[in-house]
Image (cartoon, rainbow, N blue to C red; front, side, top):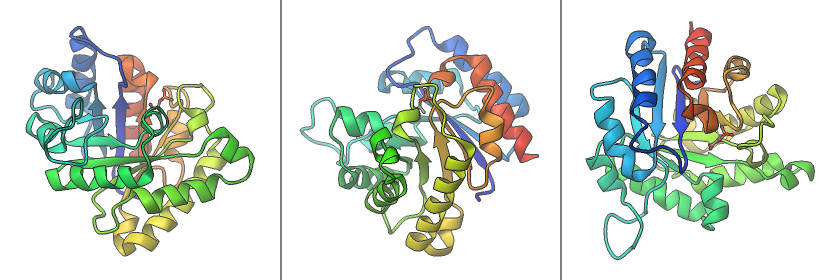
Length: 252
Ligand code: PEP
């Protein structure tokens, strides 16, 4: 179990120039309540990263991206390098989200290369793993996720965050049961210790998949759950703030 809980909002392809109010509300809450036991991140689409950074200037909120390329620069039309993300104020970057794995055919090997590029640029990669509904129903969830961890996490650098996001729980309202989350997070922890030794104990393992204001506290109390990666509920200030507040409550 890591010492600090991390709540990260993944805006996906949402947000606009009108999102200042959302950011300001979250920022006001974080400035007055956050303390050092909980960290908060917001990952908007690429064009908003610099703006969200400005809107929350000198805030405790860490701004991040939802993807990066594995190279520093070059002929990669439409891609964005980790180096540039760092330059415009990003601190974290989500890598290997299931929507990128399925919509863009990203393999765990590519995810690992992107995580290495992020680390080299000074960003903390949030490496996503998770099984499909079919894989869970066929009894292969743990095997699939541990394979993804082995292939997606750069073995030489433990300065990463892992997000366990069962694909069937993302954006569906079907949150995983506390027992399933506990079992998977314990398995992931054991695998991280196998890969990184003692450092594997400190890596934050987040849960993601239909986390909301109502279920956050129970999930965040679970052993080896060191935070949450939040999609839909991160777009509504009261809901995201309630999730951050739940993390503060369980940390006290
Ligand atoms: C996500 O996009 O990573 C996610 C977990 O989405 P949601 O919270 O909407 O299920």
